Length: 116
Image (cartoon, rainbow, N blue to C red; front, side, top):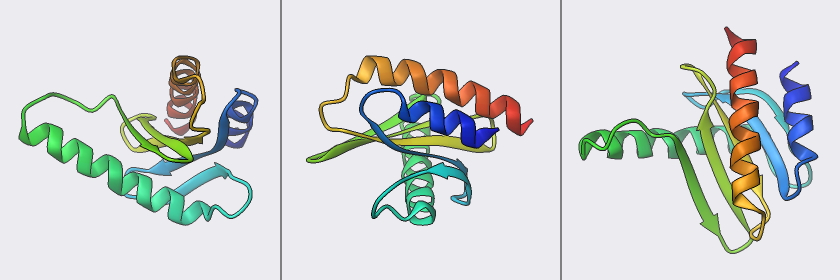
């Protein structure tokens, strides 16, 4: 079922890869192609999200809603999928961020329900 949610995300223009991962970086499911190593993608994005959560806590800025990292050839977005998991996606650099954030928000809620 989680694989279907991830597969549906690929239909959104600009999303190149996605994964559901535990908050400590273990891969639950993925939809990645090409040279991306799904396990490394899972581990690194969980680490990135954990660091952002720690930083926000230190400055008393509240809970992290999402983490977005923009690079030359793409964006990486991480969002919570329940209390124990994350949904992470890799997008094209020019992908429409508003639509993508809407769709990954919907997908993260679906994944959270599936993991209950």
